[in-house]
Image (cartoon, rainbow, N blue to C red; front, side):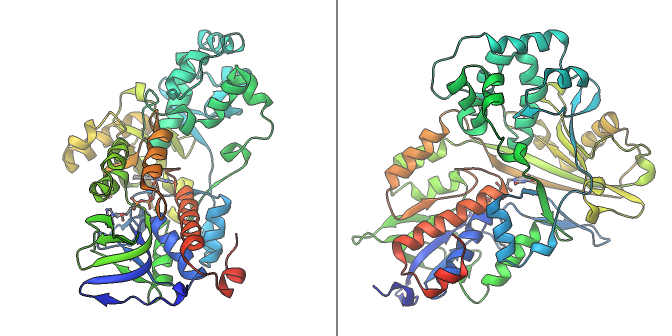
Length: 483
Ligand SMILES: Cc1cc2nc3c(=O)[nH]c(=O)nc-3n(C[C@H](O)[C@H](O)[C@H](O)COP(=O)(O)OP(=O)(O)OC[C@H]3O[C@@H](n4cnc5c(N)ncnc54)[C@H](O)[C@@H]3O)c2cc1C
């Protein structure tokens, strides 16, 4: 069909392309990069609403020039993420934490996460007993998992599954802080099937969570050795910047060009109405947050839009402080820890970045990153920046004994920043995809995994699916791109 040589043709404000990628976050950037590498002559446009690429990947520099991420600051080193960094020529910049280890704030102190936790479920009762995180009664209740009957199938909340099998203490002191730490979520609403699939499957197959997890064989994910990595010295921002630089001049990238609506023409092509033109595309990769996607798809299919609007989001803030070293005379035992919902604080997680990462080591100062807010708790986000900083400073005093004034502070607000995979998520996304049909791909944080590494893999998969449907393979596809 010769689509590889399709040139963008403008007819009365309508521009023909093979594939339109909507949204220039890491998912859209990965998809566009993949298409550009494998199909350099294809007509691809990347449409981004804001003035910059990267989406949630964002950084800030203090006046002394020290850069730090204000959105995601690390990613899992999955196969997709490492291959992508290698494709970009960034292997040498990938770094692991200088100091590892995470803990939980438990009854007035930071407690290291005991060994043998899978999704927060303790497989080794002795290690958990030693940690003091659970009371003797809590441990006894967890042991009840061995004899309790199986529950009916179907999606349930993480709190329902874990609370029912292992009791409230395991839920509130272990699973909830860990899961909330990743999703800024509420385990009473998050889907066990999506958020803790290993736990869900353990009950489904073995009835007992603990026995099921023990029998499951080699662990997967973090338990199997997947590490957190970032890029130094620029942070994850470097990832987005490198993709953008490599796409420059090769792909039509339009910033400040929000897509306002999407419809289909009589020949099955997609019409994307943007600020500057209408784009007529054979395929669309839609990587915007789901509530934005819902607005774009409203006229095309109101039911899909309704499903996508059903995906809720949590709003959070990241506050980064540079404190003089004298303000924190004793460093916390661990460079990072999570704060359970039960503690009632605004702060949900604290990382001493200058301890965690070598490239954040500062002369005479500690860099401290605090996360605030979670689904159902937006107290902190109603404050002005000044009030929010004052409250968080006060809480930092209680948590890690920090005192005095910071040299610098930066507040990043992420309104509707983190999608929530609540009970029924798979059905919502499945229905929306089925109704939209072929030729349009929903990819990104709202759908199949919200971490940066997962977004990279979703972007890659969407690009491959779109290319195999609409683009003719070129020799470059065969040699240049790993499967
Ligand atoms: C505070 C915070 C901390 C996080 N920490 C981590 C972490 O440490 N590790 C980790 O792995 N993950 C982390 N995450 C999650 C991760 O950063 C995100 O899930 C991921 O970056 C989302 O990428 P995306 O491409 O799917 O979407 P986004 O980054 O949201 O990009 C979507 C893009 O679409 C654009 N857009 C919206 N509407 C339109 C339109 N109509 N037309 C055109 N463009 C449009 C937006 O402007 C945006 O650029 C964090 C997230 C937040 C908010």
